[in-house]
Length: 481
Image 1 (cartoon, rainbow, N blue to C red):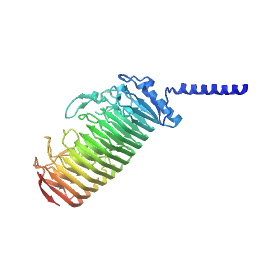
Image 2 (image 1 turned 180 degrees about the horizontal axis):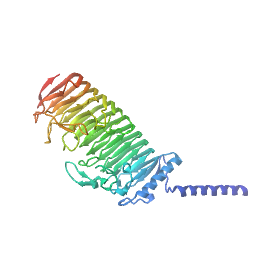
Image 3 (image 1 turned 180 degrees about the vertical axis):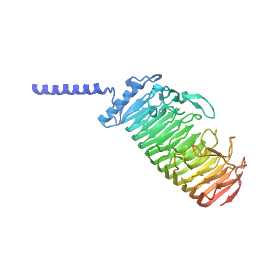
Image 4 (image 1 turned 90 degrees about the vertical axis):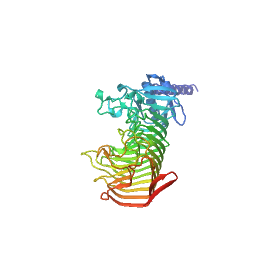
């Protein structure tokens, strides 16, 4: 009996020693045994005052949370109680979700030394080569973008650019807000991203990404504060998002590989640039993209494709979309086009890409300019369909019209003598079915051509139930084609 008691005591001492050793090396102060593991940044010494940097405390919690994920094979939450957490770059790791509670804000630093040496890793929060990562909680990440404005201007703000330090080249040298690079199984939901100094949410070479119930706000006069940039990533879902920003709102790009299987639904967008834009970075293919049930409000351009680098675009559907577009200062790309589809080489070293099997279904727009469909000699647009489309044209701002915008590259801004309902060039295969086009009687001096095209570059056009005419109160003059 005495021997058995000694053995039990020895086992208990050994177990205690092992547990003490484990907690001494892991430094995890609190680990809750629920469906998700969780740690609080406050337990790691974060102040949450917004006055001093909490970077070390937050990063320690992230590191321990990731270690706990590998130990327990359960996702781990890093919790931010209410407060303001000023930080340099944070590195999100495998198995970790940042849970930023309501009334909690992660504030990005505004100093160059707050970010890594390499410009392409300048983010407030970044995950690289990670899996099963996310951000949620009802709070916000704020990039303090207004601190990067050198001169405020209602037309377009002049921004700080850190190229003056030699850290990078060009005039867009500012930190992005949130980035996922080479990640798998990314989920971002129930969180606000506000005031980015540069791009807001950047998804790069990722697989299986879900972005839903996210609010994005960027200063309306600040350039390059894109909402969501999807780059070389596949199997992406964006839904129930509100994006109100100065530059492009949802922007798929291809630099090093193709994009396929992207779906964006049930979103509300306002921007001084393109609400949805494919490109202009377009070195590889865009395949199987769907944009459905989206509202676009007072934007400079509605649905845009800017193919400039030789990539091929196919099987793209825009459906159930309400669009309002208007003119803003011409320093912003766009001329109030509700729909804009273009292919042309960016420069003499680029080649033209192609666009095919593009569908616009159940589209309603109210705009200051018409639709622009422009292929190129080496990049013809083919198999375009407009089904159940209602377009209303009316001028209400005082900006100059009659300009066609080929930017970036190509021909730049070109003076066009008329403003047409559709401007078309270099197209092979175009179907209009149940298309209604109306003009307001006010300021209609240049609105004199429903369809503007050269037959030598536009071929195989089908019109079925195409209507064009003027509004005159309840009465309207209509031409039938």
